[in-house]
Length: 345
Ligand code: MN
Figure 1 (spheres, rainbow, N blue to C red):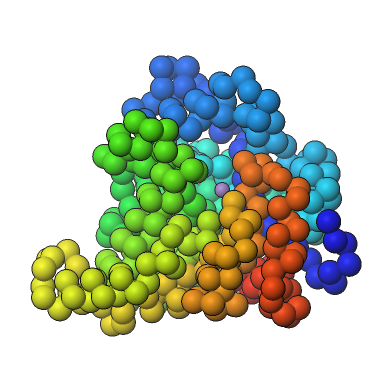
Figure 2 (figure 1 turned 90 degrees about the vertical axis):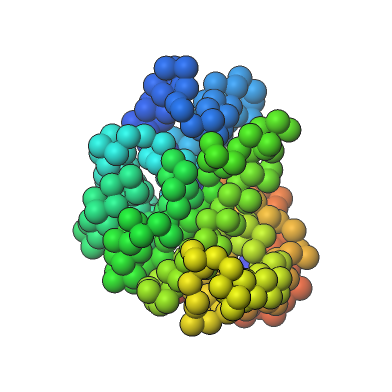
Protein backbone atom coordinates (compact mmCIF):
# COMPACT_ATOMS: atom_id res chain seq x y z
CA UNK A 1 0.00 0.00 0.00
CA UNK A 2 1.40 3.42 -0.95
CA UNK A 3 2.39 5.80 1.82
CA UNK A 4 3.67 8.61 -0.42
CA UNK A 5 0.38 9.94 -1.82
CA UNK A 6 0.66 13.27 -0.04
CA UNK A 7 -2.92 13.35 1.21
CA UNK A 8 -5.09 11.55 3.74
CA UNK A 9 -7.29 8.58 3.06
CA UNK A 10 -10.55 9.29 4.92
CA UNK A 11 -12.93 6.33 5.12
CA UNK A 12 -16.50 7.56 5.45
CA UNK A 13 -18.75 4.54 6.22
CA UNK A 14 -17.04 2.63 8.99
CA UNK A 15 -19.16 0.74 11.50
CA UNK A 16 -19.03 0.24 15.23
CA UNK A 17 -21.41 -1.07 17.88
CA UNK A 18 -21.35 -0.30 21.58
CA UNK A 19 -21.30 -3.20 24.04
CA UNK A 20 -24.73 -2.03 25.21
CA UNK A 21 -26.13 -2.17 21.66
CA UNK A 22 -24.61 -5.57 20.92
CA UNK A 23 -26.06 -6.90 24.18
CA UNK A 24 -29.47 -5.50 23.22
CA UNK A 25 -29.17 -7.28 19.84
CA UNK A 26 -28.19 -10.54 21.56
CA UNK A 27 -31.11 -10.20 23.99
CA UNK A 28 -33.48 -9.65 21.08
CA UNK A 29 -32.14 -12.72 19.27
CA UNK A 30 -32.26 -14.80 22.46
CA UNK A 31 -35.98 -14.09 22.75
CA UNK A 32 -36.30 -16.19 19.57
CA UNK A 33 -35.70 -13.12 17.49
CA UNK A 34 -37.51 -9.87 16.93
CA UNK A 35 -40.50 -9.54 14.63
CA UNK A 36 -38.08 -8.17 12.04
CA UNK A 37 -37.15 -10.96 9.62
CA UNK A 38 -34.19 -9.04 8.21
CA UNK A 39 -32.74 -8.31 11.65
CA UNK A 40 -32.95 -11.95 12.64
CA UNK A 41 -31.17 -12.89 9.43
CA UNK A 42 -28.47 -10.20 9.61
CA UNK A 43 -27.58 -10.06 13.29
CA UNK A 44 -28.40 -13.72 13.80
CA UNK A 45 -25.59 -14.36 11.32
CA UNK A 46 -23.02 -11.89 12.63
CA UNK A 47 -23.63 -12.57 16.32
CA UNK A 48 -24.26 -16.31 16.42
CA UNK A 49 -22.59 -17.88 13.36
CA UNK A 50 -19.33 -19.51 14.53
CA UNK A 51 -17.25 -18.89 11.37
CA UNK A 52 -13.93 -17.07 11.49
CA UNK A 53 -15.22 -14.15 9.42
CA UNK A 54 -18.32 -13.42 11.50
CA UNK A 55 -16.40 -13.68 14.77
CA UNK A 56 -13.76 -11.30 13.46
CA UNK A 57 -16.43 -8.80 12.35
CA UNK A 58 -18.30 -8.97 15.67
CA UNK A 59 -15.11 -8.47 17.70
CA UNK A 60 -13.95 -5.55 15.54
CA UNK A 61 -17.36 -3.83 15.67
CA UNK A 62 -17.04 -3.33 19.43
CA UNK A 63 -13.44 -2.12 19.34
CA UNK A 64 -12.88 1.64 19.18
CA UNK A 65 -9.36 1.29 20.59
CA UNK A 66 -5.97 0.01 19.52
CA UNK A 67 -7.11 -2.87 17.33
CA UNK A 68 -9.08 -0.53 15.09
CA UNK A 69 -6.22 1.97 14.94
CA UNK A 70 -3.82 -0.86 14.03
CA UNK A 71 -6.18 -2.02 11.27
CA UNK A 72 -6.38 1.54 9.94
CA UNK A 73 -2.59 1.81 9.96
CA UNK A 74 -2.30 -1.51 8.12
CA UNK A 75 -4.60 -0.24 5.35
CA UNK A 76 -3.36 3.35 5.14
CA UNK A 77 -6.54 4.89 6.54
CA UNK A 78 -5.81 8.21 8.23
CA UNK A 79 -9.32 8.75 9.55
CA UNK A 80 -12.55 6.80 9.94
CA UNK A 81 -15.94 8.46 10.03
CA UNK A 82 -17.66 6.12 12.45
CA UNK A 83 -21.32 5.25 12.48
CA UNK A 84 -23.43 2.80 14.41
CA UNK A 85 -23.80 -0.54 12.67
CA UNK A 86 -26.96 -1.43 10.77
CA UNK A 87 -29.75 -1.61 11.84
CA UNK A 88 -28.63 0.81 14.57
CA UNK A 89 -31.29 1.37 17.20
CA UNK A 90 -34.10 1.24 14.64
CA UNK A 91 -35.18 -2.31 15.44
CA UNK A 92 -36.15 -1.54 19.06
CA UNK A 93 -39.16 0.07 20.69
CA UNK A 94 -39.06 3.86 20.79
CA UNK A 95 -38.04 4.40 24.41
CA UNK A 96 -35.26 1.80 24.37
CA UNK A 97 -34.05 3.15 21.01
CA UNK A 98 -33.87 6.76 22.25
CA UNK A 99 -31.75 5.68 25.23
CA UNK A 100 -29.47 3.44 23.16
CA UNK A 101 -28.86 6.20 20.61
CA UNK A 102 -27.97 8.70 23.29
CA UNK A 103 -25.48 6.44 25.05
CA UNK A 104 -23.96 5.30 21.73
CA UNK A 105 -23.37 8.95 20.81
CA UNK A 106 -21.74 9.63 24.18
CA UNK A 107 -19.45 6.62 23.74
CA UNK A 108 -18.61 7.65 20.20
CA UNK A 109 -17.75 11.17 21.33
CA UNK A 110 -15.45 9.73 24.02
CA UNK A 111 -13.65 7.56 21.46
CA UNK A 112 -13.21 10.57 19.16
CA UNK A 113 -11.85 12.61 22.09
CA UNK A 114 -9.31 9.84 22.72
CA UNK A 115 -8.26 9.73 19.03
CA UNK A 116 -9.17 13.16 17.65
CA UNK A 117 -7.00 12.92 14.54
CA UNK A 118 -8.14 9.39 13.66
CA UNK A 119 -11.89 9.40 14.25
CA UNK A 120 -14.92 11.51 13.44
CA UNK A 121 -18.48 10.29 13.80
CA UNK A 122 -22.13 10.42 12.81
CA UNK A 123 -24.93 10.45 15.36
CA UNK A 124 -27.24 7.52 15.94
CA UNK A 125 -30.85 8.62 16.12
CA UNK A 126 -34.13 6.83 16.82
CA UNK A 127 -36.65 7.77 14.12
CA UNK A 128 -39.27 5.86 16.14
CA UNK A 129 -39.56 9.12 18.09
CA UNK A 130 -38.99 11.81 15.44
CA UNK A 131 -38.99 14.76 17.86
CA UNK A 132 -36.48 13.06 20.18
CA UNK A 133 -34.38 12.09 17.16
CA UNK A 134 -34.21 15.70 15.96
CA UNK A 135 -33.23 16.85 19.45
CA UNK A 136 -30.57 14.13 19.74
CA UNK A 137 -29.12 15.13 16.38
CA UNK A 138 -28.88 18.72 17.58
CA UNK A 139 -27.23 17.63 20.84
CA UNK A 140 -24.82 15.33 19.02
CA UNK A 141 -23.73 18.03 16.59
CA UNK A 142 -23.65 21.08 18.86
CA UNK A 143 -22.52 19.43 22.13
CA UNK A 144 -20.62 16.32 21.05
CA UNK A 145 -19.09 17.55 17.79
CA UNK A 146 -20.53 14.78 15.62
CA UNK A 147 -20.74 15.52 11.91
CA UNK A 148 -24.21 14.38 10.86
CA UNK A 149 -26.63 11.50 11.35
CA UNK A 150 -26.72 7.91 10.26
CA UNK A 151 -30.11 6.42 9.46
CA UNK A 152 -30.01 2.71 8.72
CA UNK A 153 -32.68 2.97 6.06
CA UNK A 154 -36.24 1.92 6.89
CA UNK A 155 -37.45 2.04 10.46
CA UNK A 156 -39.73 -0.93 10.92
CA UNK A 157 -41.03 -0.48 7.38
CA UNK A 158 -41.25 3.31 7.43
CA UNK A 159 -39.21 5.71 5.29
CA UNK A 160 -37.92 9.23 5.85
CA UNK A 161 -40.28 10.70 3.22
CA UNK A 162 -43.17 10.05 5.61
CA UNK A 163 -44.22 13.52 6.85
CA UNK A 164 -43.95 12.26 10.43
CA UNK A 165 -40.15 12.34 10.05
CA UNK A 166 -40.10 15.98 8.89
CA UNK A 167 -38.49 17.22 12.11
CA UNK A 168 -35.45 15.02 11.45
CA UNK A 169 -34.97 16.40 7.94
CA UNK A 170 -35.55 19.94 9.19
CA UNK A 171 -32.95 19.50 11.95
CA UNK A 172 -30.32 18.17 9.55
CA UNK A 173 -30.94 21.06 7.17
CA UNK A 174 -30.89 23.67 9.94
CA UNK A 175 -27.68 22.24 11.42
CA UNK A 176 -26.22 22.00 7.89
CA UNK A 177 -25.11 18.40 8.41
CA UNK A 178 -25.68 15.38 6.15
CA UNK A 179 -27.82 12.33 6.81
CA UNK A 180 -26.06 9.15 5.72
CA UNK A 181 -28.75 6.70 4.65
CA UNK A 182 -27.04 3.39 5.26
CA UNK A 183 -28.57 0.10 4.13
CA UNK A 184 -30.79 -2.13 6.20
CA UNK A 185 -32.23 -5.48 5.25
CA UNK A 186 -35.53 -5.17 3.38
CA UNK A 187 -38.56 -4.66 5.61
CA UNK A 188 -40.94 -7.51 6.36
CA UNK A 189 -43.20 -6.20 3.58
CA UNK A 190 -40.56 -6.86 0.87
CA UNK A 191 -38.09 -9.40 2.21
CA UNK A 192 -39.71 -12.75 1.37
CA UNK A 193 -38.36 -13.28 -2.17
CA UNK A 194 -34.91 -12.09 -1.04
CA UNK A 195 -34.84 -14.59 1.83
CA UNK A 196 -35.80 -17.46 -0.45
CA UNK A 197 -32.38 -17.22 -2.13
CA UNK A 198 -30.29 -15.64 0.61
CA UNK A 199 -30.18 -12.22 -1.09
CA UNK A 200 -31.51 -10.10 1.79
CA UNK A 201 -28.19 -8.67 2.99
CA UNK A 202 -25.31 -6.70 1.48
CA UNK A 203 -25.19 -9.01 -1.54
CA UNK A 204 -28.21 -7.19 -3.07
CA UNK A 205 -31.16 -6.67 -0.70
CA UNK A 206 -29.42 -3.76 1.00
CA UNK A 207 -29.06 -1.87 -2.26
CA UNK A 208 -32.64 -2.51 -3.43
CA UNK A 209 -34.08 -1.35 -0.11
CA UNK A 210 -31.84 1.69 0.29
CA UNK A 211 -32.10 2.79 -3.33
CA UNK A 212 -35.88 2.63 -2.92
CA UNK A 213 -35.65 4.72 0.24
CA UNK A 214 -33.59 7.43 -1.45
CA UNK A 215 -35.83 7.55 -4.50
CA UNK A 216 -38.93 7.79 -2.29
CA UNK A 217 -37.37 10.87 -0.68
CA UNK A 218 -36.69 12.42 -4.08
CA UNK A 219 -40.15 11.88 -5.59
CA UNK A 220 -41.90 12.87 -2.35
CA UNK A 221 -40.73 16.45 -2.87
CA UNK A 222 -38.61 16.40 0.31
CA UNK A 223 -35.87 18.43 -1.38
CA UNK A 224 -38.30 21.12 -2.49
CA UNK A 225 -39.33 21.41 1.17
CA UNK A 226 -35.72 21.13 2.43
CA UNK A 227 -33.59 22.39 -0.47
CA UNK A 228 -30.33 22.46 1.51
CA UNK A 229 -30.76 18.92 2.90
CA UNK A 230 -27.72 16.73 2.17
CA UNK A 231 -27.97 12.95 1.89
CA UNK A 232 -25.04 10.54 1.60
CA UNK A 233 -25.46 7.11 0.02
CA UNK A 234 -22.89 4.33 0.15
CA UNK A 235 -22.17 1.55 -2.33
CA UNK A 236 -21.87 4.00 -5.23
CA UNK A 237 -25.43 5.22 -4.74
CA UNK A 238 -27.19 1.87 -4.33
CA UNK A 239 -27.67 1.59 -8.10
CA UNK A 240 -29.44 4.91 -8.58
CA UNK A 241 -26.74 6.68 -10.64
CA UNK A 242 -27.18 4.02 -13.33
CA UNK A 243 -30.94 4.70 -13.48
CA UNK A 244 -30.97 8.50 -13.89
CA UNK A 245 -32.13 8.58 -17.49
CA UNK A 246 -35.02 6.15 -17.06
CA UNK A 247 -36.08 7.62 -13.72
CA UNK A 248 -36.38 11.07 -15.30
CA UNK A 249 -38.24 9.77 -18.35
CA UNK A 250 -40.73 7.62 -16.47
CA UNK A 251 -41.16 9.77 -13.36
CA UNK A 252 -41.57 12.90 -15.46
CA UNK A 253 -44.19 11.15 -17.57
CA UNK A 254 -46.21 9.85 -14.67
CA UNK A 255 -46.20 13.23 -12.89
CA UNK A 256 -47.31 15.09 -16.05
CA UNK A 257 -50.16 12.64 -16.58
CA UNK A 258 -51.29 12.80 -12.94
CA UNK A 259 -51.01 9.04 -12.62
CA UNK A 260 -50.41 8.99 -8.85
CA UNK A 261 -51.92 11.32 -6.27
CA UNK A 262 -48.87 10.47 -4.12
CA UNK A 263 -46.41 11.93 -6.67
CA UNK A 264 -46.29 15.73 -6.41
CA UNK A 265 -45.00 17.90 -9.20
CA UNK A 266 -41.38 18.74 -8.40
CA UNK A 267 -39.44 21.91 -9.14
CA UNK A 268 -36.81 19.93 -11.03
CA UNK A 269 -36.31 16.55 -12.66
CA UNK A 270 -35.65 13.72 -10.20
CA UNK A 271 -32.03 13.44 -11.36
CA UNK A 272 -31.44 17.07 -10.38
CA UNK A 273 -31.87 16.20 -6.70
CA UNK A 274 -29.71 13.10 -6.99
CA UNK A 275 -26.98 15.40 -8.35
CA UNK A 276 -27.46 18.42 -6.11
CA UNK A 277 -28.60 17.04 -2.73
CA UNK A 278 -26.76 13.71 -2.68
CA UNK A 279 -23.20 12.58 -2.13
CA UNK A 280 -21.92 9.09 -2.74
CA UNK A 281 -19.29 6.79 -1.30
CA UNK A 282 -17.50 3.70 -2.56
CA UNK A 283 -18.15 1.48 0.48
CA UNK A 284 -17.78 -2.15 -0.48
CA UNK A 285 -17.34 -1.31 -4.18
CA UNK A 286 -13.62 -1.43 -4.92
CA UNK A 287 -14.13 -1.73 -8.65
CA UNK A 288 -12.87 0.86 -11.13
CA UNK A 289 -15.60 0.92 -13.88
CA UNK A 290 -18.60 1.88 -11.67
CA UNK A 291 -16.45 4.26 -9.60
CA UNK A 292 -15.46 6.10 -12.76
CA UNK A 293 -19.07 6.05 -13.96
CA UNK A 294 -20.34 7.73 -10.79
CA UNK A 295 -17.55 10.31 -10.97
CA UNK A 296 -18.52 11.02 -14.60
CA UNK A 297 -22.28 11.35 -14.11
CA UNK A 298 -22.37 12.88 -10.61
CA UNK A 299 -19.15 14.88 -10.63
CA UNK A 300 -15.73 14.52 -9.04
CA UNK A 301 -16.91 16.59 -6.06
CA UNK A 302 -19.72 14.11 -5.20
CA UNK A 303 -17.87 10.84 -4.59
CA UNK A 304 -15.96 9.96 -1.42
CA UNK A 305 -13.94 6.97 -0.33
CA UNK A 306 -15.33 4.41 2.14
CA UNK A 307 -14.12 0.96 3.09
CA UNK A 308 -17.12 -0.45 5.05
CA UNK A 309 -14.92 -1.67 7.90
CA UNK A 310 -15.18 -4.15 9.55
CA UNK A 311 -17.69 -5.90 7.28
CA UNK A 312 -15.43 -5.44 4.27
CA UNK A 313 -11.87 -5.34 5.51
CA UNK A 314 -9.63 -6.36 2.63
CA UNK A 315 -6.35 -4.42 2.87
CA UNK A 316 -5.47 -4.85 -0.84
CA UNK A 317 -8.67 -3.10 -1.95
CA UNK A 318 -7.19 0.31 -1.27
CA UNK A 319 -4.80 -0.30 -4.18
CA UNK A 320 -7.78 -0.23 -6.55
CA UNK A 321 -8.77 3.29 -5.58
CA UNK A 322 -5.14 4.44 -5.32
CA UNK A 323 -4.77 3.50 -8.99
CA UNK A 324 -7.93 5.16 -10.33
CA UNK A 325 -7.12 6.66 -13.74
CA UNK A 326 -7.89 10.23 -12.67
CA UNK A 327 -5.84 13.37 -12.04
CA UNK A 328 -3.94 13.74 -8.78
CA UNK A 329 -6.18 16.60 -7.59
CA UNK A 330 -9.28 14.49 -8.27
CA UNK A 331 -7.82 11.56 -6.32
CA UNK A 332 -7.10 13.89 -3.42
CA UNK A 333 -10.69 15.17 -3.54
CA UNK A 334 -12.00 11.60 -3.61
CA UNK A 335 -9.96 10.47 -0.62
CA UNK A 336 -9.74 13.62 1.48
CA UNK A 337 -11.13 17.00 0.58
CA UNK A 338 -14.66 16.00 -0.49
CA UNK A 339 -15.13 14.33 2.91
CA UNK A 340 -13.63 17.33 4.71
CA UNK A 341 -16.12 19.60 2.95
CA UNK A 342 -19.26 17.42 3.24
CA UNK A 343 -18.70 16.44 6.88
CA UNK A 344 -16.96 19.71 7.89
CA UNK A 345 -13.97 17.88 9.36
MN1 MN B 1 -21.75 -0.27 5.79
